[in-house]
Length: 304
Image (cartoon, rainbow, N blue to C red; front, side, top):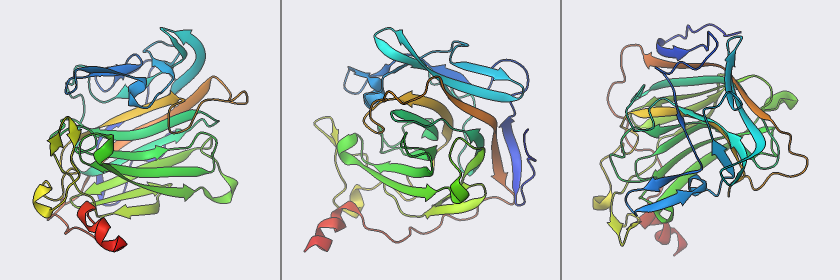
């Protein structure tokens, strides 16, 4: 079912076409459980920091490979105090060892995405190393996510700023799918990431170009400090100048989509045809200058 991997101006360097009958463990590992330990605050963070309701497993109940397709399945079942199970795959091992990371390039995923109240499927990228500090100072790139009960809309986002929720910034673009299509249909989600510019595509249609962001590593009393002057910032184009790895998952509940309703259908299946990563032919050239936009310390000036 996979379409051609030839793309003008780009050279394919890594892919998974999901041949065979099981996950290629040289390319993917699993996050497990319902949270993580934050070594900065020495605290267990339940619900993955978002009040999510699922317990991630590596069970065939939640993830399969068959007929050239990967299926990640969220199921309504109790496990370890959670009401749902699902899976989250990533191109690094749980201990942090990289399986595949890339700085700059085109990242492309062709998928059918489940929808319904309380579902939170996502195709996204995180930094291999938190070079500039904890989330979101080191960045996040979201190729695709949805508000669960809005199947006609695709969200493309970048996260950046200072460590912790109080110091982060988010730029999200809502792309309405044309012609009555929904995320349950086949679509190709891609990001082309170059020094100083990030471009999102849905079915090769450019949906948004980002060329303004910032990163500040300052922390006070365990919380990120919002930049108040240029000297507080990490050098442009931080944080999007480091290797990132790929993540695919179906979350359930959380503070973004809310909780499932009686009408939400389970199992909820994210079906992936292929994942492909390309390098730009001829290289990336010089870093682009920062685009238009306000920095945190300029926001108050606008209010005056």
